[in-house]
Image 1 (spheres, rainbow, N blue to C red):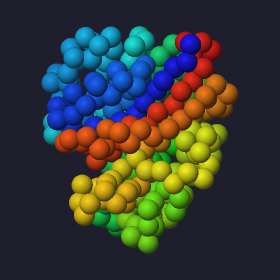
Image 2: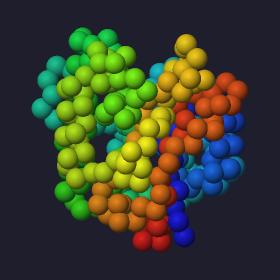
Image 3: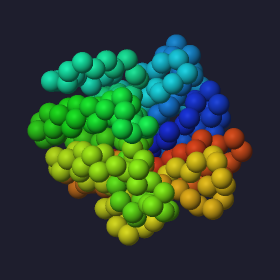
Length: 266
């Protein structure tokens, strides 16, 4: 039995619910990580997912941010927030993090801060958040347990992940400190699943609503699954499904997915 895990920045679950439910059914997705749900927990459409055979958990806030997971398997909640560690003079009341366990697998859904305008307070928050994520990830990694971190990372890792990098050189998504922190996270021992399967493909997961970006394929790849060696060993395939982005009233992101040899993890 293979296991299909997806991640989708839905840009409002209320607006995109039918699109999401249709896609997970058509794609035979077993677990989906969602970002930018933009709703408080009590207004999340738990029942609609339950009716499709999914258990749900969410960490939301009104109108902004929000992460959620829907799974055909039992979900065990671990944490809804990152520790502060030694970060000083920062507040964090934004719903961007959700760590659960499904059987033997640690599954972390993130919506990493955008950071613009940079420099500034928002960029400082982004880098601080990444430092905290790195420390948390290392703690989990050192337990030698299967780990998947999926979501909207708001990081352009390289020119290969962008239609025209010259337009992004001053953006928080591509600034050198951003990319350095992303490398630090991966260098814990994780692998970008899409790049493992498609080392040279120029494919994207986000297209702005403005200036005909979708029609021109002026996109960027900022949604990832980072996986530990235990998951690398059972990775069968990985991809980006552009179909939902071409539908009526779409999210500006499109789903990404990985397929695992499920019998060894469940």
